[in-house]
Image (cartoon, rainbow, N blue to C red):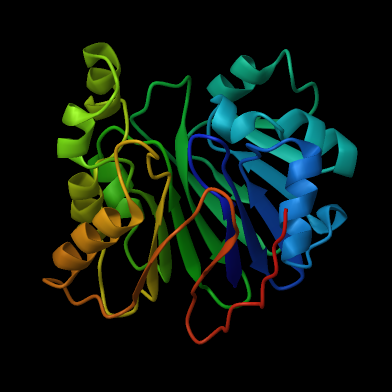
Length: 266
């Protein structure tokens, strides 16, 4: 199994999962032209994507979902609540109840309801049919429920929101109401909270933790990485910690798989 984050953050999110000869896109927060540019930086033809799974309806995760799916004939999946929120933009696809498992051609994708201020948001755990490798994808979560943490056991790689530093958020440019929403139980995970989630599912077989959805105003890659490293150093985790970027694809390390050489230009 292989995976690449095409970009994560408030300006757009998308991630490619590849198992065998099948490819699935998680979220489409970029319009078609930008999505094609990011995919082709990895030498991935947009037409090779078989399915699109949308975690929730917010603009940075679903902006390009309907247009990309229509342009490249992707089968689109979203929870019932997400689908109703997208109805004006997306006319064709498949809805599911959060908690369901999607049986795709080369992988299965378990959906897990998460705490976020969206209609029916989900985290995902994708399992390759041929190798059994498992990747967890956790975006936009206010707090980690027991069901979420339990679903992340035995992963080979974890892509996890590490949105903000709590001190930076309090001292940052946002008004109190926005700070309360971000730090609230249906907002976003702080660096500290992300560390707690990762520590709860850490084990020696976990190859990598990739930090995602960093705030550009209330966090930094250095802060997020240092906080996660300090927390995971107290566990059995011996893998890599990487920080995803908003403007450039990054490979998600899995086992001994070497990341594909990437080139990217604007």
